[in-house]
Amino acid sequence: MVMKKTMVAVVAALALAMSVQAGEIKYHEWPMAPIPQEIATIPVTMDVGYWVRIKDQDKLKINLSQDSIHTYSGCTSMVVETNSSLTFSVSISKVSKDGNVVVPGDYSASVSPANIDSPGGTLSVCAKLQNADLSKVPGGSKGVHVANVTVRVVPRFF
Image (cartoon, rainbow, N blue to C red; front, side):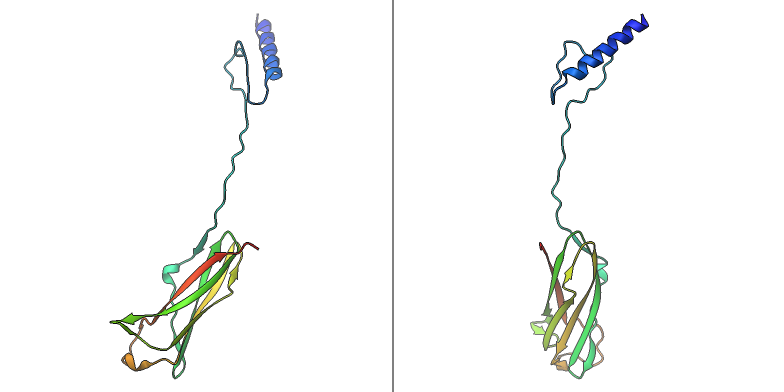
């Protein structure tokens, strides 16, 4: 009796294997046990976007130090993590208080290197103030906020 049931199960399994076509199963009766049968494989795809992260962004600050009587400069290091090739650029804007520039002068900013590839690296972001008019701020002032450097990024496709 056991042999007969085994033989029926084997015949049913063979019939099942021979009758399966891609995406289709047809039976009058399911095999002896309710065994799940593979009927299709579906590929799963996705589009991967671009991402970039500046580590410890809240701790970044550029402190200007005096180079000569009316020239100041300073830099900060910025650690970048990314999954693509990127080009960075920077701009600088003077800070105004009560409608007046805090420290008038000629401001400039730079970033080096401008290009970073995956998985990332370290950038040096610098600011410079030339022809600084120090008459608007009392001598001995500490931590005076005079400008903001804006960092921009764009992916490189080549």
